[in-house]
Image (cartoon, rainbow, N blue to C red; front, side, top):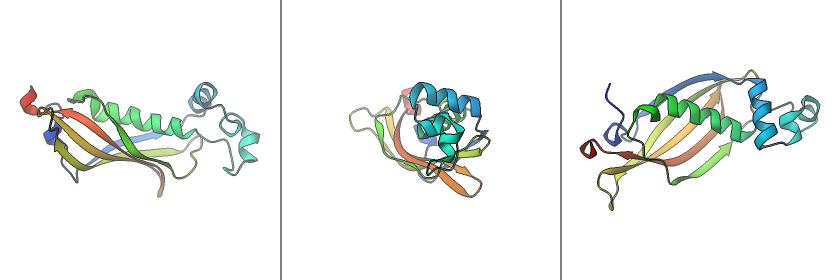
Length: 149
C-alpha cells in the first residue's frame, strides 16, 4: 500500500490501531520519571486513593496511544507533525494488565490555505478497555498531499 497522505484521511474514516497490554514495570518507570504521584508509584498509595489501586499516569496512557498511532499510521505517511489539539480526557483509571484498544476517527479535513500541498486533518483518538472508554482526545494532524510528492 502507498504511503498514507492527506487524501486518504477523509472524514468518517476509522482506523484501528490495535491493542496493548499495560505493563506494570513500564507504567511505574514512566511515572517515576515524568509523573511521580504516589498512586502511580505505590500499590498501597493507589489502594488508598480514589482510584482504587496502582494506576497509570494519563500521560502514560496517551503515550501508549501515540506509539500505536506512529506504528499504524504515521511511520508510513506524509505526516508533517501537529499544531496541537482541543481536548484531552482521562475518563477512567488504567491499571497494570489492562488491555487497551486504540483507534482514531477522522472528523474533519481541509487543505491549508497558506500551504496548498498540506492538509489539516482533525482526529479523535480513543482508548477503550473492554466496554469502557479510558482516553479520548482531539487534535489536528498535518499531512502532505499526493501532489506534493
